[in-house]
Amino acid sequence: MRTVYLNGKYLPENEANVSVFDRGFLFADGVYEVTSVLGGKILDFDGHAVRLERSLNELGMRNPIEKADLLAVHRELVRANDISDGMIYLQITRGNPGDRDFAYPSDDTEPTIVLFTQSKPGLADSPAAKTGIKIISIEDQRWGRRDIKTVQLLYPSMGKMMAKGAGCDDAWMVEDGHVTEGTSNNAYIVKDDKIITRHLGNEILHGITRKAVLAFAREAQMKVEERAFTLEEAKNADEAFITSASTFVMPVVEIDGEAVGTGTPGTVAARLREIYLTESRKAAI
Ligand code: PMP
Image 1 (cartoon, rainbow, N blue to C red):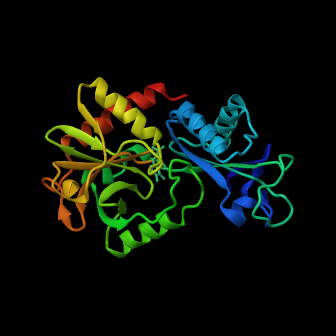
Image 2 (cartoon, protein in one colour):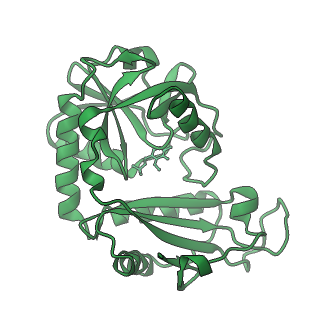
């Protein structure tokens, strides 16, 4: 049984309970982060802590924990659950005001904070990284503040199910003819050696992996263009791939049944995955 963290306490998972009045449960009034662990060390803790702070600020939600304490909780959960490779899930909600009311409660309502681990031995050696994944395109029907990492993930869940139903692995969402991002990852194409990914804005989540990968790409003198691209461009690209904290860099080999490039993982994605994993392991804490 896992040890989880709830509101200052380390508890067995079956003893960690949250109120039925919690606003995370009733209104999806909560934010989250997923941080990867490789070799027992945490990847890009700072990036996730900074984005968490931003999400909380955008929603006017109080942060119940200091950064140093948050790192200590991450480390203690890795230790207590003997995690070598896997993820740490963190969620903060606006807490339990004792009743259901659309208006935010006053500041004396304590936020709820939960962290738990997910063990994924061999996380960085996923077979999909060698074969690539197949995706479908779907209309982006999410709300307009996708830059805030909220727990309202029903549409992305529906998207995953639509992909599964079509015999695929994931879905890229399209708005006004342009790809926004994947259900739980950022989307990229490569054309004539140029890496193209949507610019930052309210339309996409500002991926921590995206930021790191683009920095590594630029350091390696690769050309990067941050702009919206169409589904047609993606289907005619030389390569496509996704990034996220738990998939790192993952090649996409098929979009809506059409092969991307040669229909096999591309060299740019493979190289970025290699650089990202090597550098992230080095910097892990
Ligand atoms: N976009 C969306 C919609 C996501 O849910 C995620 C992962 N949570 C990402 C992008 C990738 O972000 P990160 O690299 O920080 O995991």
